View (cartoon, rainbow, N blue to C red):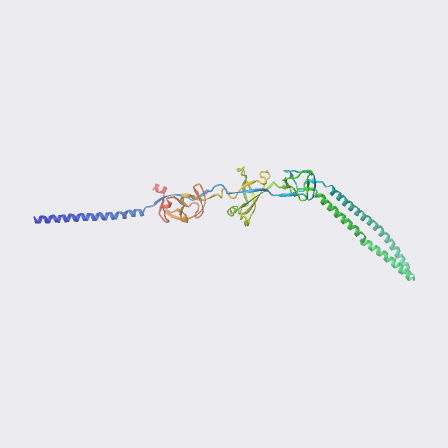
Length: 403
């Protein structure tokens, strides 16, 4: 009985030892399992979607509204006061430089010119007569001098000194008269009269011309504001002449807009009422410094307007960029990652995630312009990028499906 109890106790201890050993083995197995799982996780590659960075349009060319004006626009003032006798041109008429537009009554001016012309004619006739008289007097003096020389020679042959002196004085006097005659001193007064009369005629011509109002340049008459019978004062602007065959297009640009146009020799423009018809205009001027008050940069273009499609006072749209310039490197907006002030995209580079900082620009549809930090053709992660870290192993979804 005693030995039976001892055997049972030994069996119980052995059973307990077996149970304990099994428990320890189970515990060991359960602690090893997470380690195995961690190894699997560490070796797992993240599957992502990618898209190559490429050029996309950010929309239509950027534009600026501009004012249309004639390349030449000159006021036509009257230089004299008077009553309008005739209107020779009207609004819309084409004129050449110097062509008459308005004729003022000029009766008094015509009379003044006739008087000046009469005075000039009289002075010229007086000069002609004086020259004839001088020629006659010179001939007489020459004959007289020849006679006096003979008398002097004869007197010198004798002994009468008084007679010799008298003959000499007479001869010298005659020669002095001839010298004075040849010097023309007697004609200087008459020549001065002629010069004064000629100046009076020129002044009368200028005054008379001022009664005829002419075009100061080639162009088209606009803003005609007078009619026959009206009395106008000197200095009144009666019309404007504009050269509408060549047009100026002017506007002011902000600094960013000015940079878009800078360096270009011509720009495209179109009328908003007919946007399908686009033409080019030559860049004449783009300010290098802004207006001190507006801080804007002046832009001036010029273009031919032989078809008359552009009207002074109208407006056009000027394209500062081209369609090609609007094609820029862009990525899907959803691929961009923002963390605080940092903006970046994740790239797929030989199976490794690469974090790349970028500078962004405009948005058009689902794409956003990348100004800096990215080149065309680089592979951008467009799905799963928010869970990636720099240097993490990744695999493209298409490649993962094939494997």
